[in-house]
Length: 99
Image (cartoon, rainbow, N blue to C red; front, side, top):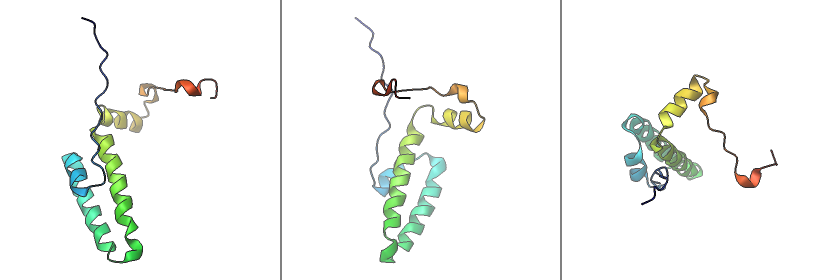
């Protein structure tokens, strides 16, 4: 038997379904999402501002994915505290020599 490297678990993508985004968010962010979503829906009664709902759902979708990633909170704290040495530097192979 050979050991296989474990791939990091990918966060589930909730898409742009508001209920799925809400469920994917940590409890600490759900109230903010709900308040912003309700505000965007109210603004959407003006057709010129309907796009605001779409933009909000895209932003919160990406946040939900980021929040679910292992190590996210630690990375945020490292950034806040200026611990740049904690960040992994990654350069795709196809970029070698270009930077």
